[in-house]
Amino acid sequence: MKHIIFSIFDSATGLYQPPFYDRAEGQAIRNFMQAAEDSNSMLAKHPQDFTLMKLGTFDDTTSKFDLAPTPIRVYSLSQNIDVNQENTNEISNDPSVFAST
Image (tube, rainbow, N blue to C red):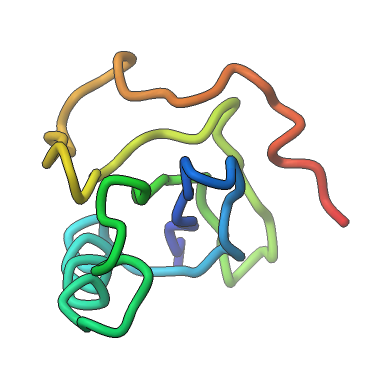
């Protein structure tokens, strides 16, 4: 089964949080929005800084990653970006964001 890889981009720091996996974009958006409802979270305190990004997929039957050439913007807490937009929702053209550590 393929799992979608997501990360939350923090525009204040210019950093991506460690990736996480969900089965569908809608599930990731719901989890992202729910985390933002916690008044003690950084997401709630600075929603304008955080954007949910899709990084690619992971297939758990083959152990293969298929990474997007650039992170794809899925949902912004401050702008409510439509998850169906194409090509206009890339945040970076720098493939080094996929470099492994």
